[in-house]
Structures are given as structure tokens and as C-alpha cells.
Length: 184
Ligand code: IMP
Ligand code: MG
Image (tube, rainbow, N blue to C red; front, top):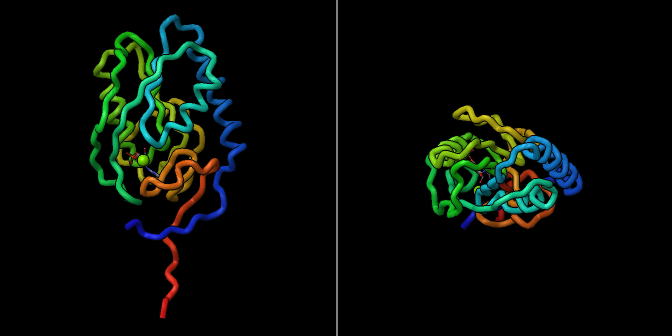
């Protein structure tokens, strides 16, 4: 059973997320509209789904879409190892790839996925992450597009989960272990 948590006030309200997602989409559109290659958007399941779908709606370049699933994280602490649970099926050789993540924490997942995608010989690989939590970075990762840098807190909502729950919250909240109330 998951440890009980306490959910604090929203760290990033839903409207601010949407405004920032639109700004990122405009920036990405500007960067890719002059290329004559398709943009392959590769979304990391499951956390980045909500962000990626909103982002795609605002992008004004022609895109191709695929998903992969990887994890390096269990509960509130990273395990340090990356496992690829499912890979992309779409060929990406010769295309520009935009890897879409929910959050970069230690950097292990993003760094590993960047290398993995680069091995398919795309024309380029860039990383777009909704959140950047630099406090526990273990390896340097270049994040080309960042939604918000956040403090060293565990967050959930807008795709991010705690033990698979809370992904559907429209805003992003800080979660802390619940303070135990003595029962006797
Ligand atoms: P990294 O490999 O340590 O950078 O971890 C990246 C993955 O850890 C993300 O894709 C998330 O699934 C998960 N993660 C890291 N921090 C948080 C958090 O604060 N809330 C929820 N998931 C997190
Ligand atoms: Mg996750």
C-alpha cells in the first residue's frame, strides 16, 4: 500500500500551465517551421501524455507521433536504473525528434532516452520537459525547452502521479508524506 500523502496548495495553477504550454508551442513552431523535415514527437508514457497532447494542439508544424515507456522511479525516490518497457514503432531516421517528458529529476531517464533515440540516426534530437527539478541532478542533460523549473519537492497532477494516482488533476501540486496523527 502507498504511504499516505498530504496534498498542498497548487504550485502551478491550471491556467498558468496552459499559458506556458502555448508559449512553448510557439517557440517550438518558430524553431521547426523552416525545416522541411517531419517533426517526430516522441512522448514518454505515462506522465508526459497530458502535456504532450496539449502541446501538440498548439503546434503549427506538421508532426508525427509515437510513444515509449520507460521508468527509473519508484514511489518518492529514484532507483537509479532505467528500464525501457515499450519502444517506439515509427521510424525516426532522418527526421527531427522532439522527446517530450513530464519532469527531469536525476536526469537518468532523459539522458538514457536521448542516447537511445540518437542511435536511430535521426537528423536531430531535442528534449522538451514540462518541469525541471535540478536539485537531484545526477548527470547533466540538455533540456531544450523547459516549462517550469521547480524546487526540490515531490509534485503530482497534470500527468504526474504518486503510485499511479492523481494524474488527472488539472494543476500541479506539491505532495508530502502525511503527518501521522496518533490513533490512541
Ligand atoms: P529521472 O530519471 O530521475 O530524471 O526521473 C524522471 C522520472 O521520474 C519522471 O519521468 C517521472 O516519472 C518521475 N518523477 C521525478 N520526480 C517526480 C515528481 O516530483 N513527481 C512525480 N514523478 C516524478
Ligand atoms: Mg512517472
